[in-house]
Image 1 (tube, rainbow, N blue to C red):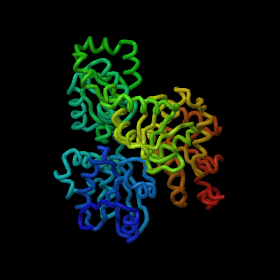
Image 2: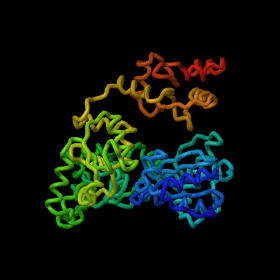
Image 3: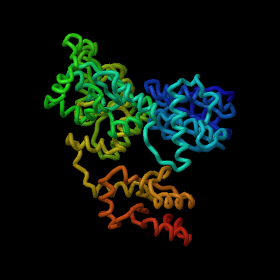
Amino acid sequence: MGGSVKDVKSKAEVDAVVGAGSPVVLHFWASWCEASKHMDQLFTHLATDFPKAHFLRVEAEEQPEISEAYSVSAVPFFVFCKDGKTFDTLEGADPSSLANKVAKLAGSINPGEAASPASLGMAAGSAVLEAVKDLAQVDASKEKNLVEPGLSGSLKKRLQQLVDSHPVFLFMKGTPEEPKCKFSRKVVEVLKEEKVKFGSFDVMSDSELREGLKKFSNWPTFPQLYCKGELLGGCDIAVAMHENGELREVFKDQGIDTIDEEKESGDAKGGISKSTNLSTGLSSRLESLINSNAVMLFMKGKPDEPKCGFSRKVVEILQQESVPFDSFDILTDEEVRQGLKVYSNWSSYPQLYIKGELIGGSDIVLEMHKSGELKKSLHEKGIIPAETIHDRLKKLIASSPVMLFMKGTPDVPRCGFSSRVVDALRQEGLSFGFFDILSDEDVRQGLKVYSNWPTYPQLYYKSELIGGHDIVMELRNNGELKSTLSE
C-alpha cells in the first residue's frame, strides 16, 4: 500500500495480497495497447488518492496464469477485490467508471461528483480529467432521472474541429500504421489506393469522444470517413464508392490533392505491406503458413494447450462458432514469431486470418463475435453455412440457464417492466444471462414469433419460456420464483 502501484510477477503474489482481505485493484495491461497506457496514468493517480488499497499491475500476456484465473480476455481490464473475493470488474478504457469503482471499493463518494478529485487534478492529464468530469456529470444526470443524451457544447466543438482539421479525415480504431479492426484497416487501404492525404483519430483512445461522435454524426459504428466536413459513411460505403470510382470523383470534385506515386509507395504502411524488409524466403514461408488453411490462427501454444489467456479466448470463440481451423504455435519458432509482426504490421498475438486476410487479435475477434460480425464474415467467405434466425435464437436462449430478453441491460434498463424483473431476480440472488432486444431488430421481432409471446421482457429457464413481467412478479410474490428457476 502507501499510494504506489506494484508490478506483480506471480499468481502466488496476487493470491497473498487478495487473501489478506484488504481492498485490491488489479490492472491487466499489455505493452502494445495504447488504451492500457492511458488508463494506467489514472490508475497510478488513484493509487495516490486511496493509499489504504493495494494497486497491482499485471502484464496480461506475460502472466497467463493470473489472467486465466481472473478470466481476462481483453485489455485494459480491471478487477476489484475485497475480503478475499472479487467485488467487481471493468473491461475497457472508461476513466469515470474506474475512478468511481475504486472509490466504491476503497472509499466513499457522493453521487454525481468525481470519485477522486484530489489526485486527478492536472497531474492526471487534461484529457483524463475532462473525461472523468464530463462522465461524472452524465452519471449525475442519471441519478436525477434526467435522460438527455445530447452533446455538450465543448465536445461538439472538439468534434467539429477534428472533422475540419483535414480535407479528408478518418475516425478509426487504432492508427493508420496499426489499425485495431479489419474495417478500419480496409478504409486505410482504400485511402492509400486513392493516394490521398488524410488525418485520423483513434476512437479507442477516448471513450467520451467515441460515444459522442455517434450522436454527432448519427452514425453508430466505426470507422467514419469525412471529406470537407461531410460524412461519407463507414467501411462498406467507402469500399463500394472506391470500387465503382465514385470516391475518386468525390475527391476530385472537392479538390483533394493526391500523393505522387513515388512518395506514396515509400510511405506505405498498414495491412500486409509489400515492402517489409523481410527476406524473400521468410516472406514466402509466412505467406504459405497464412494460406495453409481457410482459417488460420497464430497463437501462443496449441488449441488444446493455450499458453496465454488471449489465445485461449480466440480458440474458445472459434470452437463456439464451430469453425474448422488450423494453428501455428509462435512460441516454437522465433523467426516466424518476429517476422509475422513485420509482415502483418500487427505487433501482438494471437493473430487470426480468414482466407489469407488478417482479421485481428483477441480484442477484435471478441468484438466481432459479440456483434455477430464474425459469423457473418465466415459465412460470406464460405467457411460456415448461414445461420437462420431460428438457430440464432435457440443458441441465445440456451446461452444461460436463466436467460432474460429485456429492453436495455441489467445496469441500465430501458423500461420499467424490464427493470422490475431484473430487481426480482437480483433480490432472489439468482444469476442470469441477458440480451438487449433494442440492440438487434432481427432478434426483437424473431423472438416474438419463436416464443409466441408478443411483449418484453421474456424470461427463460433451461430454454423453456417462463413468461413476462406479470408472471415473474406473481411467482416472486408467491415465493415460487427461486424454486421455479432452480429445479
